[in-house]
Length: 567
Image (cartoon, one colour):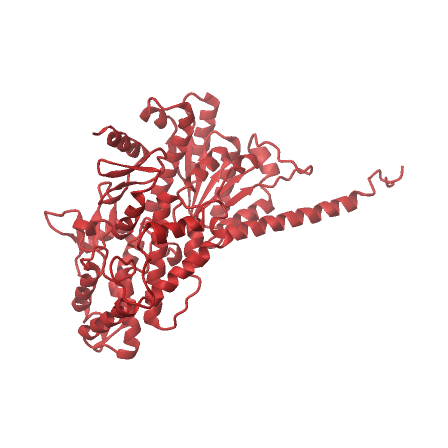
């Protein structure tokens, strides 16, 4: 009976349990370290739960939005084993045997998975920066519903607004699955949550001849498009003032924090610390002198930002999931600054953000998987970065302050704005930096935050006229950008007066992308459009209007079908 004590217990239990606890603590620490490694400062978290939700988020991550962090959570490793999403989390089971039992109902989930360790990991994923949580789920699945309801409780305790996006089962699936989905939706809605239902049958209705193997990829694409629209409408559009500057959304390439007009203003503010301007002409003359140096002597500041980009592209985390991590790219690109002079700092921010936006814009259709691919596009496939840091700059050059089209509208608008607002942005006749920032930029952003973009335009803007009713100018010149209303009822910021080439918000980025699209093997050029050959998740581009935005996946599929049929 050696090894058994008087109570009939194995004498080696204590040792084994201690060893198991040590191993468990080590495993949990590794898990926390892994989570911490991939967590970014993104204000929006999209978490796919269960099999269906995880598949949809994995699909979304193929064309990620900047300012968004993606995560998949499940109770078993198989469902997330094929994921390229950097942040994936398998819930740890309380089963003393170390197994992960199948989740068949809420009771089994609460017993085995709703534990303190799993909750702490989720809180680490959400962090302090999350301003909006979007949970993606396939309604009808056991584990997905249980995880989603559990996550909403955690988010509520952390005061994080939550939206649920879920697919309802196909009509050919069992009735009990549909009933389970309806019950889950009702429960979440009764808890005060916003639930966006996506009927899977829409795929069958809109694509009568779709092959069985294409049904679920098409459904994932529909979910991805729905979530993207929610991000644009619920977060990016209405909260642009609080999005960290290093992770601005890539689809808002002209609305970032270090745009051209803002940079002009910051340079003048830097100069004003020494010059104390009393008339606008002196400030504008010095601004012109500062910018002219880059044309004549070479652009050492932009050149440095390019070298920094090349260096950080080779960091292991940049492509750790097999695709370019655009959030990490923006964060690292803005990590360190090498200029003390306020003017050079302002221009340095501008160069870095222009460069980050370009790479993110190209990544939407190139889907980079290595540093070499990015380098090849920037230096070999385009002429954008072929400039000197120690000699005159001529020709097509991304960082020069001359406007997207060469018509120099940003500079012209800025000059007119300074002159128009001079008495309002000065104190005792001297330029006042705080007033300049508030009147030219701050008031507009605050209004968007409080009222939303549409209400702000209705309050502070006027139509350009009967010839261009889609163009809106601020009632007081210089207090906001020019906006253009798109066909789907949204608004883009113009890089000029909102007409002609300047009506395209991503005009300059697209001009660069054109050099690559002409040779991209995944695209064909047909009837004035660059359209994807097979992958319908890729963007569509018009040869001079840039990227085409669709209101739904169905609209995009119908558009591509019509373009291909046209002769």
